[in-house]
Image (tube, rainbow, N blue to C red; front, side, top):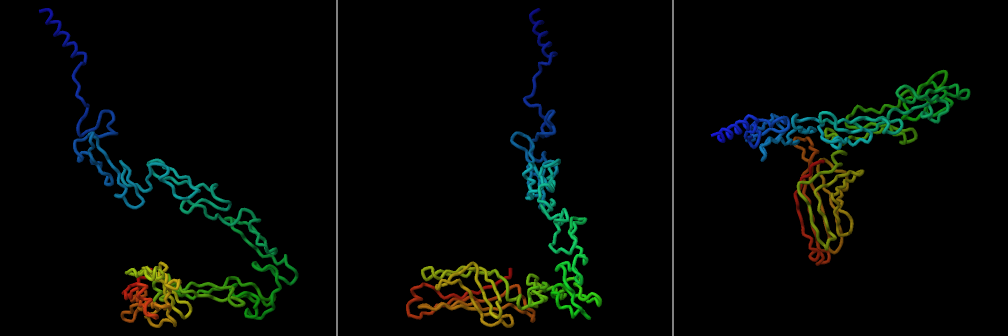
Length: 395
């Protein structure tokens, strides 16, 4: 009896001292683990792992821990998916993610996984500053007056506010009877009664002034060649003739100008809806192109396939229409003489429904025909006649 009491007492003491059975894992399934609740969430299904962030894929992993995989493709352009935050513009994980391609910025991945691109002017050349959106850009023209020397000794050259050069004419630095021109130095002005008498100024300089007392004076503003036509690029060509002239180049890059200016209609490149190809005559004839370029050189229209296509005479294929095209139709060809006479032709037109020309595409037919001159060369060459409908779309 005393022995039984001793054993029972020992068991009770063990219980009182904390020697109790412990589960294998201190886990509340579907909840968070111990003191590390912020790091890992335990789960029994993926549904329990929803973090309410649309750009993450939430799953319950093999170890019953929630996983949130960020998918950048689920964000807008320029944004990245950051776990716990969602889609963030300029997001990053390391400094390398923030490289903006400009050598004058210090690129770092800063607080909140956001890129920071700090401009440093010292990393640019003299008279440059660092623009975080453009890199090193000019920062004015000068630092000192010496930077503004225009080699015209009757002008006073200064570096003024904004690091800009200023050139002030000073007639006192010229000889008696001379005046100082900002662009020409000291000169003797012509006597005049009217600006039309002042012929020693170039046309592009502008309209000269006539001072009854001091004679011809420099133009105050350059020649204005603006013709108020959005379809022309206006400039003054100082090299044209002896005094220059206004020059107007049609801006064929504007779609609204194509139909009104024939020179635009007949210049430009077009992608084809079909590839035109043939290789024969032991490789001497070798063309494969899906683009053609039109060029009006004076009165002659040239059509050149691209990529480069070779003919049996060793020259690239270039089709020619003699005479300026009229209307919207074109017909260009090239002939290669020899035992087998080769004829290549592109004939077509730009559509003009209702009399309004559509310059954006054309419809045509490419033909290749081979005619024996000596009775056997065409058969030997293996070249075959072709007639291929093509549609060209302006690029």
